Amino acid sequence: MHQWLLYKHLDIKLIGFGIMNIFPVIVIYNQKLYGTKTYLSLLKGSNLQVLVYDNSPVAMHKMSDFGREIIYKHDKDNGGVSKAYNYAASYAREHGFDWLLLLDQDTIFPEDSLSQYINAQHLNPDIRLFAPVIKHLDGRPFSPTKSFLKHANPVEKHPGRRYSLSHIVPVNTGMLVNTEAFLLVKGYDEMLPLDFSDFKFINRFATRYNLFFLVEMVCYQDFSNEEQDTDKLVKRFEMFCKSARYCKKDNFYDSICFFYVVFRRAIGLSLRTRNTIFLKKISSHYFS
Image (cartoon, rainbow, N blue to C red; front, top):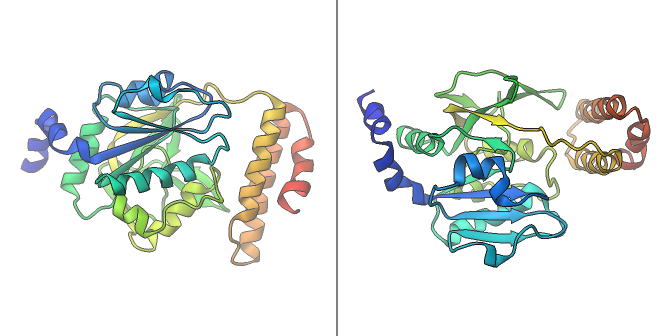
């Protein structure tokens, strides 16, 4: 307890001691870095060196937009978060960063997030993965999740504790992962650019490191800019089907579960858009 209080009341010194060994990677899509929720709430003024991985069809920035603290990578082919996080891990290894902070553009972090991560590291030196509690803006839980029939169901857990990755899984954004451990389990599967990517990574990670620490902070995921265009939603659903089809099915039960997840998503989108094209896409993009 005394050690925790020492770190808690010396946040500024603690940041000066440990922050430079954390390497954040933020994945952006059709949005400039400086307008993202994640940059504004976490990275602005942090003095961290950051990788900005831009998956937009047309680059949101030029290299000249940034100083030396920002590494900018444009991937016009949109390799997804998996390719971005793997790229960041390679950079982190080459430049001596021990920790990767995985981020998307839509997460709102509390003011003391960086010190909370660092405190958690110092108090749990054997843990190789840390993650925050994440909620929707209306307070509903978002992460961590528990899988049921291959569907991610958010669960409410007490922060400040260790949990088994066999029971609950944190989502991608906000995960602080030891670089060596990340590379040892071969990182993310780039055949899963977004959907199911965190579950596949955690499955790999749990084969060597079964525990993670739920950090004492609550972040909020802002989905206020969710896509409304049906054509774009159809393309997004096609990608979802492709990822579900690629996921390994060990038995008939797994096959039923993945079909359930795809069918559930199709029904939801059909009701939302009043269009049955999503149900038709199951045949052409999941079973084909």
